[in-house]
Length: 251
Image (cartoon, rainbow, N blue to C red; front, side):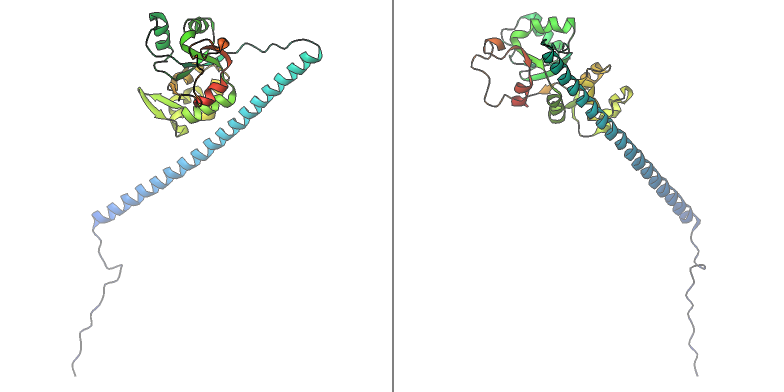
């Protein structure tokens, strides 16, 4: 009677794994744990940042509404007492270039270069002071300007807003872009940027310089027939008081 040889299969404990492979597994495991830990920290920080952004947005909304209610209250009080209400002088205007390079004197041409109005339908926000008011008077035949309201400012930045980074035109697709370049001023989101521009805050210059010149379209329905006359004469140029209607047609 013949006996068959029994084959034994080595158990997992009996399999010898090379030391280099064990070290590699440990290194890979450690790297995986570190990566997961870092992702968790980033996710946690992002959630905390979003909460800060939402709280600021709510605060800004309350601030805007309070300002509107105060404006209404002052108007009603003046009307009730038989007086005229004169609103505070505006600090912000939006300027749009309407004429090209032909037949422009050197001084207005230089001013438009300083204001970054290099092409037709370019637009910029400008903080009003004595110097900028004098500049606007000199370039009135070539531009249209006026005070934008909050809705217009927000629509411009959300729809036409681009960042100027290393002389490149970068779309504002992420709050991280804003935080990276304006975080030192406490501006970390688009709503912070809108608020700084709308209120002409202490960091207005940095926020405005961060924005690329707005590129608008020709207005729906076209310009007035006598486009280069002053606005009060039936044209388009000069101080329009409020520029919201023109911007909405060009945005």
